[in-house]
Length: 125
Image 1: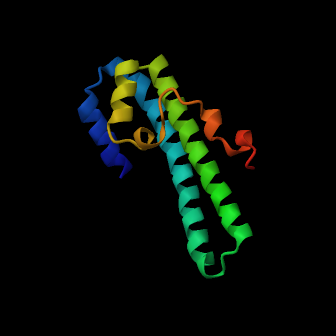
Image 2: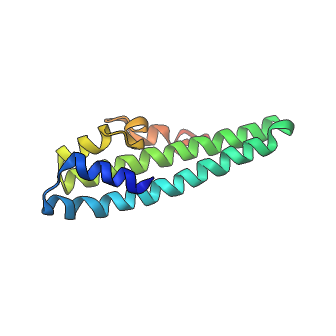
Image 3: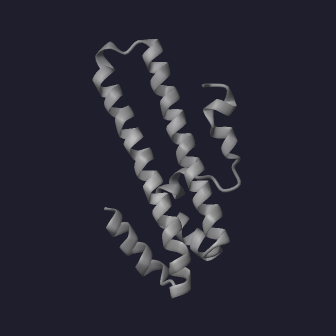
């Protein structure tokens, strides 16, 4: 699936050699981080399914806190991607990547303070 995403980005962006050299290392780091976050989300869903029949308030609270943490990680990684791309390949690349169906488009709110969605900062954890 990642190869398909890379192919779509490659064809959509039509990077110059210089833009490509600046973009792909940043995007590979982002994709790796998203994989780790996705693995955590999958583990959480599995934990929820495994405990569904015996779910008590304490377990439900724990699962909710984990979900907030995963969402916070996702926001942070997407925001970091945007900042790095703006410094490297530039604004065109950042806007295209974020509007091109990437997970960051769904989860990252431009101008939002990532600390607002961090459960530790909000006092939830």
